[in-house]
Image (cartoon, rainbow, N blue to C red; front, side):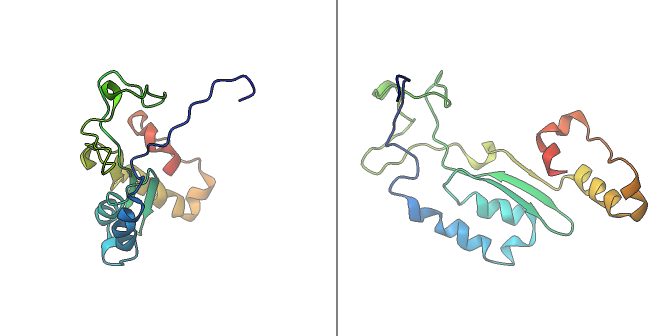
Length: 148
């Protein structure tokens, strides 16, 4: 557009599967399911759309990155458009059903029961803590720093 290259695609993992996520959304509406971070993650895993989900209750914090993430061919870059050629198709792709082989739930970014965040929240909840600077998170927790 305007002299710049543009890529367009009509292929997405949820095409013709929009209603499939209804089960996950129904689980979000079930108080018993939402009682724990693990139950929340189980519900989020049933949502085919790519979302970053966050969860908090009085004792737990959780995160889950949902989505039907197709397994891509070796060497492909998911941040770049792919050539419309069978050699670059999603693994196990079936154009008749618009399904493919998807990354297992265990490979989705997730976190639960983050003790360092709970400790930080308890510290901030104390009246005297409001006058002290917040404790720094350990470097290995940089991915969840924004949750604090």
